[in-house]
Image (tube, rainbow, N blue to C red):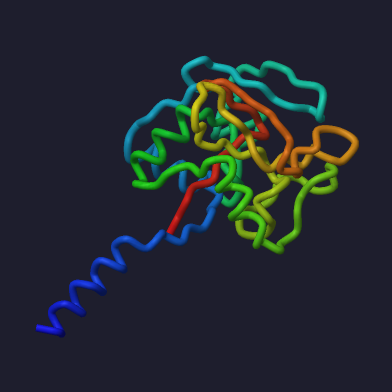
Length: 191
């Protein structure tokens, strides 16, 4: 009987323990797998255009810019973070993959232990998801808690102390649920 109680106790403890999550940037390859499996059409593809950022202050609307061709001209590499995606696109990916977006606070808690290079100050191009810290590569979409506004986290390679401060946790940058950009991607919670 003691063994049964011990067994039940062990099950209860393991089921009620908080989960340890990691943060993983979604790559072009992973997003491509989702698109191929579902036939999903992104917000940028529906509109036929998206924003392409030239530097921290200058944007232009570019026809044909989407997750496959973030600048509207050149195809993206499979190893790069997927960009030109909206919150709505990220949520559809999460439903398909059985994962979720981090909240803003979860994001910063999880990236604090990543000691890889932070890509910012416009010193490097957007880099492979495996080679650099999530912070400063591309802005990440986070799950809103009590708002329709989507808070972006982490900054992009255009961020520096003199410009957008995106690599600092207290920075506030919001977009709507349909906005994508050449410097907006998303990361997911994984166990």
